[in-house]
Image 1 (spheres, rainbow, N blue to C red):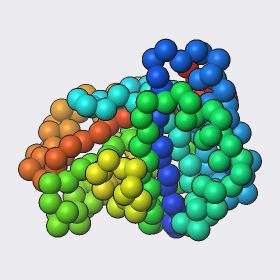
Image 2: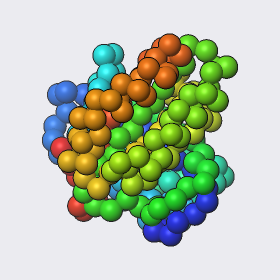
Image 3: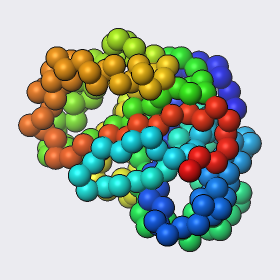
Image 4: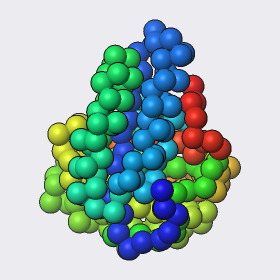
Length: 220
């Protein structure tokens, strides 16, 4: 994997809802299997583990995979790679109730390709009432770049709608840790101003918090 900054990155987020009766050993196998894919040549960055927090009235995912690539072609190559196919077939499908994936191209990407261990990530997906408002919404999301304790912001329009459940915009805000992320939420004026700008254009918002593991190993 690379830690070098680049101007463009392809983001790939997959959310998993593990069946509640799943034995811990099988969850460990799934997480470790996903993290083993970091060795594939197309992968710039990969992290997988349990979500810290999910904020949604209707969706309750338990785990997340985040990967980065140089191009859509590299993402496609990763998807069909035998090692990836094997992990999906043997370790993921048997234990999940639900899955969701969102992909986008992050232009003018800055900062490390791989967020440091213990970084906190705020992942947000937006479902729009009117797709004609997409450019305006993307502009509002982009206004968060450089705000306060946000160390890296990546956002864009989803280009893989089949498994996205209607969500068409994705973003990742990276913080040094959970305390910095929580500080953003405590800034009531900032949070209110963002909501007011986009509220009327949104049908649904999915917000997830994830902490990059200190070691790429299982997280229950």
